[in-house]
Length: 503
Ligand code: MLC
Ligand code: AMP
Picture 1 (cartoon, rainbow, N blue to C red):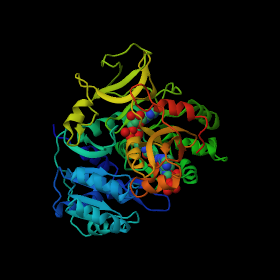
Picture 2: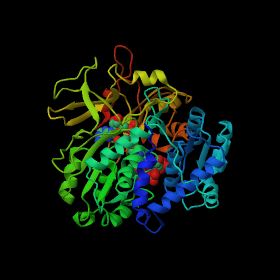
Picture 3: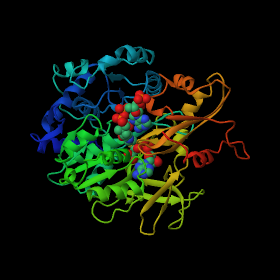
Picture 4: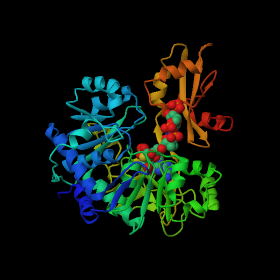
């Protein structure tokens, strides 16, 4: 079936032509009609330069109205949008360009000295710049071209976007998301979260991950809602703008930080009908404190790059602390044992999902794709949970050692590989320890010769890995605990040190 998700959005753009879409307080705004034209112009610039449907367009730009226009341009022109965290170093970006072989790479003008050489090594044909103040070569050219208002026909299973997510090996894999899959998730969220006339979304998430890009923006677009578009999360700006919003989405750290602000209270939340939280576990303590403080119960939901949103608490009806709710429509969700057999209600096992929202596979990694599905077509999320007999899911952990820090996933392997090479270091183990603000803090355990200090370790990581992946602290130990097979017991490190660690 032909299905460009942009067509689904475009019906909204037409109806809501003069309505505000993105509004940046003190920083400009764009209507739905203007966004349609701007994305058409950007599509024309890239098409004129030879970018074709199916080509990857790699993007590492700051959050702005034009950044969203570029995303929509890629959808309508059938390019595969590949967003990258702005914190990634040139080394990390170099890996993604080499793996994805994009035809175009767009980055901020002031990053040219660092990123142009990387683009040249990866042989990227088209390089353009885009700054968050509306300048840059892409923005300038988009002001001069004849916009292409057509939308390229795509099939439901054609790729729309590709987002990198790592694995236990530390080698990132590109999860390929399709037009049909993303659209299905958007429609389901619009419906289950009961988006309605008059809704205004407060958007303070980054837009290089599924949470800020798809989960927050898509239902708002389908609702032709105004989106208060904050460049980043900041408590004062959020408080100032909450008073005009009806929906806010965030990671648990956002809610923890709001509550640290002495003035934050019910008066800030009078227009809000729903706060959602996800990407990382929300503790029952934070959930309960938030209700006591504001009178609002947070709607916790559970998602993943490969699947979009999998489950959500109901917006109306009971939202239970510590649970992530029920499977979305068109999503089959089960908790399975080691043999991929569904467990009894209440028993712990691995979450597996099947449905139209799912990604189509890992970019050029057919074996990894196959391994991640069961023979009956369920995707193995790697998350550990139990399900009640009425289908409510409670996450209890993860089967991998992945750390989630402030909503960003960090894979210990890529840090350990660098630390292990530092002269004087014998071996290392990286784990996540509880942290009041970030949920988990990346922490390094190091067996090293005398004289090896944390500055040396930090220096080794500088410029190689994004700062949010760097350990917040180190423990120098005589040896790492190992099981009889010789495998480092990370669970023991987490248990032994969780009460002594201070970030
Ligand atoms: C920033 N820093 C972090 C960090 N974010 N360190 C650890 N974990 C993080 N998450 C570090 C920076 O490297 C820098 O270090 C210092 O903190 C200040 O940077 P900053 O950018 O000013 O930080 P801040 O604005 O405070 O950012 C924290 C944050 C942000 C929590 C607001 O990380 C954030 O918005 N997180 C949301 C992540 C998200 O959207 N996840 C969705 C994934 S999708 P230094 O050393 O230079 O000072 C997904 C699927 C699903 O999971 O279900 O949704
Ligand atoms: P990502 O690969 O960045 O999309 O991260 C997906 C992972 O985030 C999931 O596999 C979960 O481990 C975690 N996650 C998402 N939402 C929640 C939640 N509400 N509670 C606990 N973990 C979550």
